[in-house]
Image 1 (tube, rainbow, N blue to C red):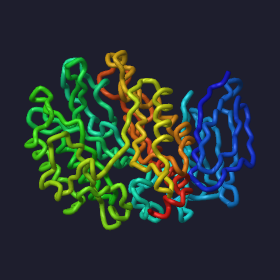
Image 2: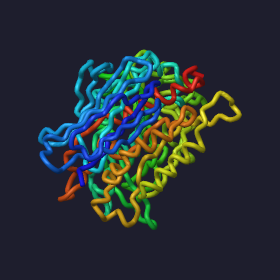
Image 3: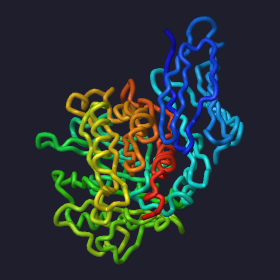
Image 4: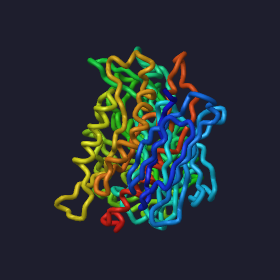
Length: 467
């Protein structure tokens, strides 16, 4: 019996990855498949545990079919088990030819090797992908509409901290994000679910639910901090940031909806965001029909969408860079399940049923689509710290790169990979359950979004035509 785990090979290039050879010594399992263009394969690797484990080793050699580009996967033991990718016959935009990339190893879990090629033939990987990935991809994505672009997104994005709220709330059942907004941005997230509430007279991010007539929840980052973090990012990088405002409440006044005056106060505070899209004649225009170049060819852009309750209007703020749900329709349907199998099947079925990106207008279904890759706590989870929101999130992380990616097609792919605990893949809520533990962060999700754009959506001529 060996010590096993996985490496998921995500092919976002137009070339099959052909296995040209493999060799191993003392590895219990070392079998490598060809990886077809636009597909991924979760490969099981098992180390031998007899003899000298320091001698365990393996090599698998790949060539990108029809090209001279090659890379190698290696298994070595150096105080710990590690898998490596060596670019012995190719380079990426951020990795030189000959670079050795340490993928690490996770027992009974996966590490990822993601490699994609854009329309110019440039290669990108999950090893040091560019922070300004949209800007760096304008050659391929600039003339695509937002409906035809995939990006990462953060669910309950402002809940990267926890300030005590109601009885029954704690950080385990209220905090949804490990990283603050600025660091989510640095790791590639571009769609943000913000839920402003009034608490002690100021606007903060909130995460509240009504259970049997009682409100339960707490607060996260202040809106003033979020605005400052977004402004810090846009002063450094010229990216598109989409902010969706919803679930607004007045926690100082029995959790009622915000009044028009309070919405106006929120809109006034949001005027502090730099890079807002100022459009005096938006009307009923659908911004998801605009191409990426319309937003960021000359600088950063922040698109603010407010999900307005009945009786609330934008008023003059409609000319100040704040828009309503009419201006950015989305398909947003979460699964409301704590079961990975149930959620994944539900989300992939909804994607298949509601996305058909084709030229024929009679058959086309191309509403901007959120793939809600999130698990929702149920009653039995709320007081179990091991079933914390962020812990549930990482249990479905690996399947995004294998099960989900393989379900995407050139005609049916999501616009947002929508996640809790964005940027982490390991449990952060552990004993003594008093605060999130320190865990590593990873850029893999935005490298995956780049692979969707480069390796899946790019095979749809209707998408690449920019119509």
